[in-house]
Amino acid sequence: ASTTVKLNTGALMPTVGLGTWKSAPGAVEHAVEFALKNGYKHIDTAAAYGNEKEVGHGIKASGVERSSIFLTTKLNNPDQRNPGPALEASLKALGTSYLDLWLMHWPAPMTPEYKADKSYDWLDTWKSMEKLYLENPDKLKAIGVSNFSVEFLERLLKEAKVVPAVNQIELHPSCPQQDVVDYCTSKGIVLTAYSPLGSDNSPLLQNPVVNKLAQNYGVQPANILISLQANKPNVTVLPKSVTNSRILSNFTVVDLTDAEIAELQAIDKTAHFRACSPGWTGWGSLGFPDCKHLD
Ligand code: A2P
Image 1 (tube, rainbow, N blue to C red):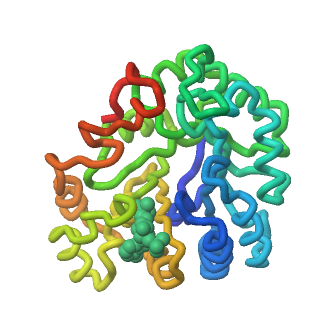
Image 2 (tube, rainbow, N blue to C red; image 1 turned 90 degrees about the horizontal axis):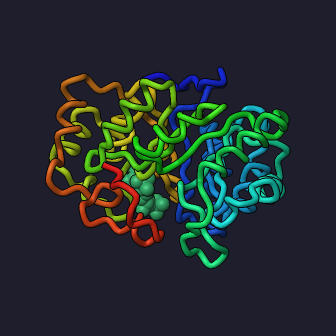
């Protein structure tokens, strides 16, 4: 697998990055510092994670030059009406003058109370982000989206001046979202896989196919799941950990054969979970029950 993926801006995005969703302030600073000191060059956070400040401290503490780090953060849903100040707040919290990538976290404008704000259109949020990007090349190196299904991307691309560089979505064998992967690949939009292990207490780590391949390659089950994403030509991947030994080992990617990839992709056709679960309430709990299901 390649160690970088090229964005439609020409920039190179490191294939494996450190995820920080649910990394508590207090743990994440050390995780970021440790990851950067041990070869990671790609850190992903979000205003909504409430840990940008600690991520910034971790970057500083690592001593690694900002210019050799790919740093992503995301616009929080309640800030969609007015993204400019939110961008400034993220830059300040992270202690940096620019972002390598800034994503719309969800196509879901919200009120400050985190209720769906149906009087605002996320397409207008994208237009504001485009304007900020075009007017501030020193602050924003690329913009993109997250949690976008094909229907949302189609609507976006009809009106977009700037094609998103990235769509960050949940991707693992029980949430393959192949339609989104294929669509983005056809449009030159790089995918970033979050929750590649299936998130906390994932049953995928016990899966027999995953464990068989891990034994064959002499790696942990997590490495097989990370490698599944990293082996796709248009995908970068964000394993999350706050544990030193796991941060270290998750950076190892093995080259899987086409047959092994097919075997992994076929793992779970019945028990989709999280974003791909038939009963997933993500969109509903965001107050957008009319949004089409992700998979
Ligand atoms: P922790 O952060 O306590 O180390 P995902 O990236 O799919 O969201 O998964 C993150 C979850 O998987 C976290 O609970 C994390 O725990 C755990 N995890 C991270 N790396 C590994 C690993 N190599 N083996 C087992 N579990 C892991």
